[in-house]
Amino acid sequence: MLSWIVCCLMWLISSLAEGCSKLPPVDNSVFVGKEIEGQTLGIYLCIKGYHLVGKQSFVFSSSEELDVSLPECHLGHCPNPVLENGTVSSYGPVNVSDKIMFKCNDGYILRGSNWSQCLENHTWAPPFPICQSRDCEPPGIPDHGYFEGENFTSESVVTYFCESGYHLVGIQKLQCIDGNWNSSYPTCEPIQEASKPAEQIALEKAIHAFQEGKDLCSATENFVRSLKESGQTMEELKYSLEIKKTKLKEYILSKYK
Ligand SMILES: *[C@@H]1O[C@H](CO)[C@@H](O)[C@H](O)[C@H]1NC(C)=O
Ligand SMILES: *[C@@H]1O[C@H](CO)[C@@H](O)[C@H](O)[C@H]1NC(C)=O
Ligand SMILES: *[C@@H]1O[C@H](CO)[C@@H](O)[C@H](O)[C@H]1NC(C)=O
Ligand SMILES: *[C@@H]1O[C@H](CO)[C@@H](O)[C@H](O)[C@H]1NC(C)=O
Ligand SMILES: *[C@@H]1O[C@H](CO)[C@@H](O)[C@H](O)[C@H]1NC(C)=O
Ligand SMILES: *[C@@H]1O[C@H](CO)[C@@H](O)[C@H](O)[C@H]1NC(C)=O
Image 1 (tube, rainbow, N blue to C red):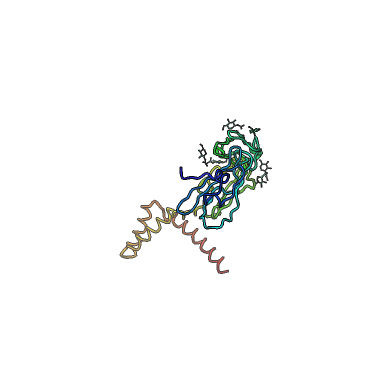
Image 2 (image 1 turned 90 degrees about the vertical axis):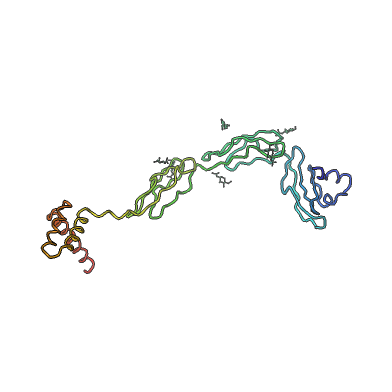
């Protein structure tokens, strides 16, 4: 720490230190410099009651021509507070230890601390809050799905639907609460192939049994026995085959008309 040079004194007395002569003084500030391996690291510090606007620290070598825009020290110990979409209890220049309060405009919700204090080191703590809109962004749209609802203001609800052949996985209704949807949006997943009906399984089994038969007679016996075992009667089977036949006919007719 001892190797730091406080330049305001040098500027007043003389410009002996190489680093100090390079950077001109700034009103209401002190310049603190340090030599590191042929380079000078310098920072401007505003005095009490002033805060810095612009770049605070500079690194330069003594041979280098300096072309920098200097900072300024403005009245007020900490930067003047601003709050987008809200109001601050005091906007003017502040003194050290001053406390300010924050309020958000209608339709905005305060996220963070509703107060802050100007500290000795020219910073505010706790950090400034933000005013977040109470309206939500349009919610996401799942592949093969959509939502109904055009209002994204707080309390509004949107409802999700899937295209046919897809079913909804997740929560169907989302509600906007103070700028955030109350859950993530659902997805649309393909509906699994319906499992084969019992009568089709029975028929497949019976056909298999038929094919196992050594001759037509035993094959037919196998077929009927297999059907009986699965609880299907010949009548039921005939009926379901008739329906299939009709459907197939309609299908073929519609295709080759
Ligand atoms: C909120 O702040 C932004 C940025 O300053 C501004 O563009 C917007 O109009 C403000 N909203 C309202 C409702 O005042
Ligand atoms: C800051 O302090 C000065 C002098 O102590 C006083 O005149 C001024 O009103 C104070 N400013 C605020 C914002 O309190
Ligand atoms: C600030 O927030 C605190 C709690 O976080 C609350 O009790 C207080 O009423 C608020 N003050 C104002 C002015 O909104
Ligand atoms: C300012 O001082 C506070 C409290 O002493 C400290 O927490 C904070 O880190 C300091 N900020 C900077 C930029 O030095
Ligand atoms: C959205 O909902 C709010 C609150 O229910 C209502 O005041 C507003 O008119 C609605 N806006 C639209 C575009 O429907
Ligand atoms: C979100 O809000 C909707 C509508 O009020 C509700 O049906 C849903 O259960 C809520 N979701 C969660 C995760 O709370």
